[in-house]
Length: 176
Image 1 (cartoon, rainbow, N blue to C red):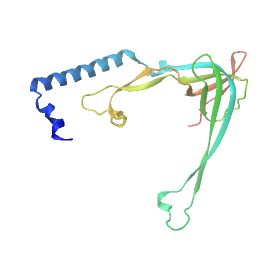
Image 2: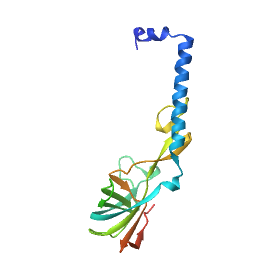
Image 3: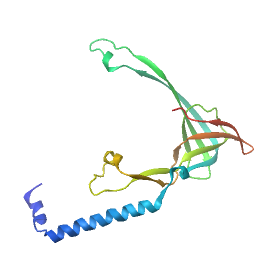
Image 4: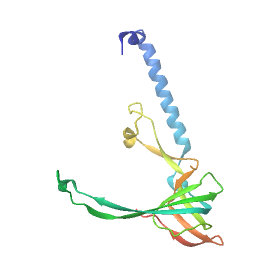
């Protein structure tokens, strides 16, 4: 930054700076007030959508780990199997924007199945503070609220019910 770029700042008076800070403080207060009016209780943001499966893809993953204390330079390090996980991807027809559902777990679903999928249709929004940066990591200690959001084309399922005659005949809950 050259001296030429700093010259306009040197012409600011105390009153100019006070006005700038007051305006910034007002914008933050207005943002936080708007956030409070849009805030909802998290439990009110859980919803479900009935849909039909167009295509199902299930993937299994094996997990391995080498403890840092057992890593060897110039040789082979021991590898320990730590388990398996399964991920289900469903292409679906629904009455909303959703066309793909992901599910962490096993659910024996196939084309043509009618399902009821449960989602969290919300996201966290953080209150602004004049002393915090805009980086998300700095917001972790700030107060937050839950805000309703629109459905995304791809959503993560919290639970899936398989339906027959509009009644659940099986329930699938994701693995941790």
